[in-house]
Amino acid sequence: MSGNVNDYITYRLEKAKQTYSDAKILAENKSWNSCVNRLYYACFYSVSALLIKNGTVAKSHNGVRTVFFREFIKTEKVHKDFGKLYSDLFDWRNKGDYADFIDFKEQDVLPLLEKTDQFIEVLEKLIK
Image (cartoon, rainbow, N blue to C red; front, side):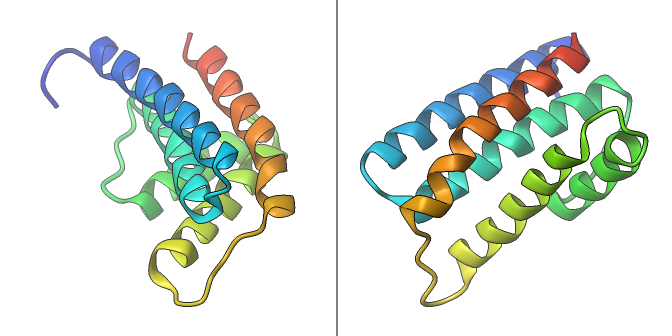
């Protein structure tokens, strides 16, 4: 990681917000699989910023999820509903990216937009 820790955290939070913005554009264009991908990555970037802020490093997506659950969901620093959202998006992103014949539907994806926005806000508050 080049730069200092605060630069990295700021970069990851900005990337989370930009990726969330991309997800909204994809939703407007009814590109549901790509929207799920971007929603997952928006959460992933904010979680990775939170982990770095707390001096934790994970080397894989699954590692990030495992540490997030251990350090923040199980300790109730982050509400379990956000843990479920992150886990669902993790699974859906994997299915959407790697499985055949997976087509997410509008009614399943649209509610995730607001929840993801809230997720990013909650983690940003924890970071600051």
